[in-house]
Length: 252
Image 1 (cartoon, one colour):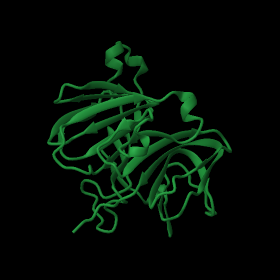
Image 2 (cartoon, helix red, strand yellow):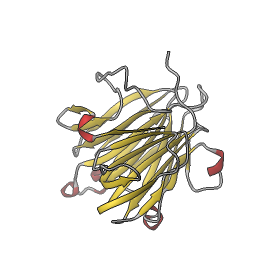
Image 3 (spheres, one colour):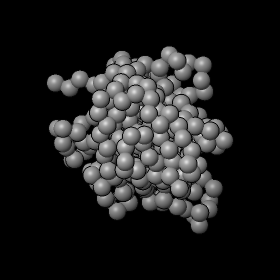
Image 4 (cartoon, helix red, strand yellow):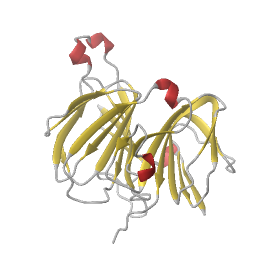
């Protein structure tokens, strides 16, 4: 049983002027052989993109990519003809499969012709490996009602059989599920009882049961065989993203 707390200031950082990105795992030119993934989760990027900029068209392959916006709006376009505007409360999944090209830009204000409303977009993008290579590329998005998000941990993206009847985006990984919640001050949720659980606090603060130090904005904790622990939001509340995983990526 391990409880591995990863403070926000230990993350790798990329600052390109238009992009302020913080990486929970090795990413791009940031490489640490001891921090390549946790379970099936390879990427947990906490990104802020300035208005009128973004990621130009680029390729992906054999990856399940989930995007969760905290503030602002992000425009997605891909080579399969999918277009979408992602905003807070709307989860998006792109399955790269045999290969896909896509772009992600903070230019949603252009759709309304209201540049005075241009703001940075803040989002978390997470990548998990699929359980089967060579899938057909795909795209799905789903809006989660605000009152549902405030009621506790909500499955927003899952490939696990137990969520087949839930309103969650389907990902091509039967051993993983992503939950989200916007917790009011003092609200408590119980984390999944799974071999591997990754908790990320993109906004606010929360205290994990049997852990003296609160998790604050940008902190994460990696739980291995830790059981169904409770998480309690701090005085200002918290938004949390939780991965439940029943397998791990074997490297080498």
